[in-house]
Every structure is written in C-alpha cells, then in structure tokens.
Length: 89
Image (tube, rainbow, N blue to C red; front, side, top):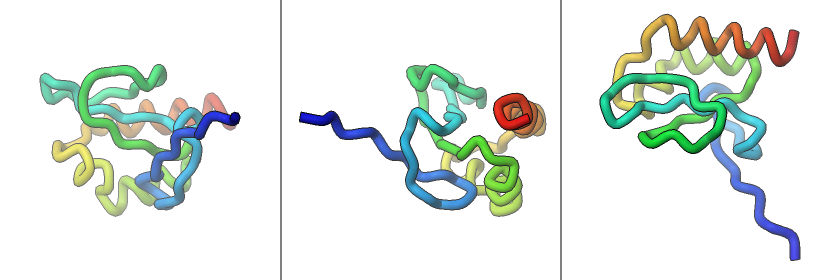
C-alpha cells in the first residue's frame, strides 16, 4: 500500500503541492520568523513554492504575514529569494 504524500498550499500561487517540494517559513514559539528546511521546527508554519514568482505574489498579498500572524522581516524575504536562486539558478 502506497503512503499518502503530505500536501501543503503555497502562500503565493495557492496551489497544493507535495510538502517536501516546498520551503517552510516558521514562526517559532518565541515569535521569531525563520526558514525551516527540515520541516520539523516547532511553531506555526507556512509554505511557499521554491519559485520567485510565488514569492513575489506572497510578498505583495502579505499572505505570509496573515498566515503566521506576525510581520515578516525583509531578511527572511531576501533569504527566501537567495534560496530560490540557489535551487533554481
């Protein structure tokens, strides 16, 4: 029997995709926002496709802020952009 693949919705394009193919942004229990590549960090998570277009949409619509209920620092957005360039560059 095949195991079910966990799905998550991208905060940019709003499409559901495999969890392992996405980047997790997490608000830790102390309120800090960081990137979680292992998918195991404690806190509230939001997912985004590793696509610069999805990042632009999410940033413009403030979807990550709404989902995590905290302001997202520019450093997190720039790290996401750098990570996407690294994986797709």
